[in-house]
Image 1 (tube, rainbow, N blue to C red):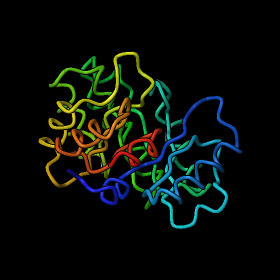
Image 2: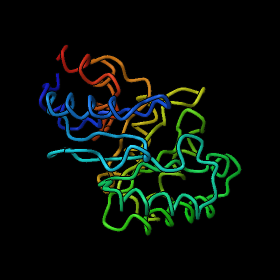
Image 3: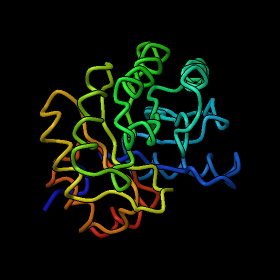
Image 4: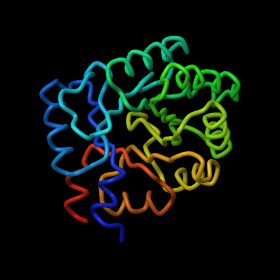
Length: 215
């Protein structure tokens, strides 16, 4: 069993609900500090975050569909970094992966990586909407484009969120060269431990407290 401290140390405590308010973000930051998690992840309109302390601040780009022009994603990333984002979680154009336009997908990711400067880029591939071959190639292209992480899901796609199978496949593809973030639908300590065992090095959770309280 993974310890509470170990799990807390890889959590992105997340608030991406469209109806979230600045007061909700302030509450998220306070709770994140209390829980001892690594990072918070908020919508770009909520940046800059007031008094994040030692927390890593992450935001999202092209969220949640990924279906925006590459130059818009890049501009969004540049603005997010200017507004204080330490990490940028970008959504791929999922249709490009389904249509096997992996050159276009790689170029899209590279644009965000370049616009993000020294900030870490995590690439959300929406694994539940892809088959195994598409997952593997999307991860390969994310690595080729210079990303630091691959990530399973937005948590908003009707196909579902993270699965241990997808995490294992992603880890097998990127080895120890990139991080793997599991997110979307992880609501219990058992599910969190399953993702870690499958190879996740980061967890995106909105219900962090409920999970950590059971460890």
